[in-house]
Length: 222
Ligand code: G3P
Image (cartoon, rainbow, N blue to C red; front, side, top):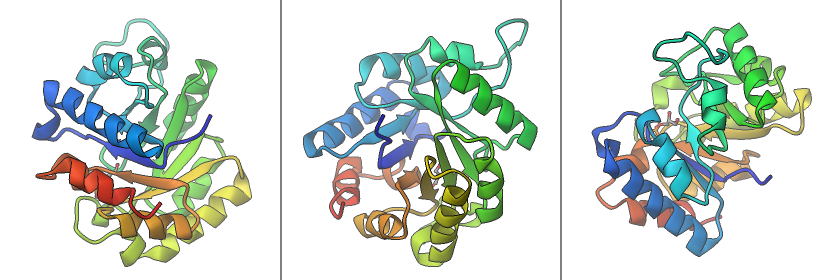
């Protein structure tokens, strides 16, 4: 199954509360479909079911709790996600970190119900370590650049190319992404030239005055 090139993580911004997550998801699908560029969305948990039933493009959760069905108050399990038509989930985002053993359990439990996992890592060493769980995707995101105006592809291109090399040395089937500060079509082009399959981004789209214009620029150099 072809992995997306651009994954938009909605996070918990005010701009994606309630129906706004649905409206943004529809816009991202429109730009993706009109231009034939595979894109995906990661809406907040509360919008996940509605968005996943509505969209054709892949929908991912922002996190999952590696628990079986049962007495777990307030958790979101792989089994629940499996019932909501999502493609998969992010895991271990730097804003929602998990112990390494929980990451491994989450990857295994999601794989058992046919869900793709994109494991987030803060640096090349963590990415290589997480590759030993053989997730579908790994995204390297230096925390200090997240939410900023300087793209990881400009600030630290070596972390992108180095992570690609380190991850595929463990498992060449893993799709490697980079994220943090990615805002433009040049950033996306550079990420792909450095060997990444695609990018994981948030504020450049979610907080944009004109998200459609940003989306069209992001895919303009692919
Ligand atoms: O998950 C992607 C996110 O952490 C990157 O954030 O705002 O720098 O695109 P941003």
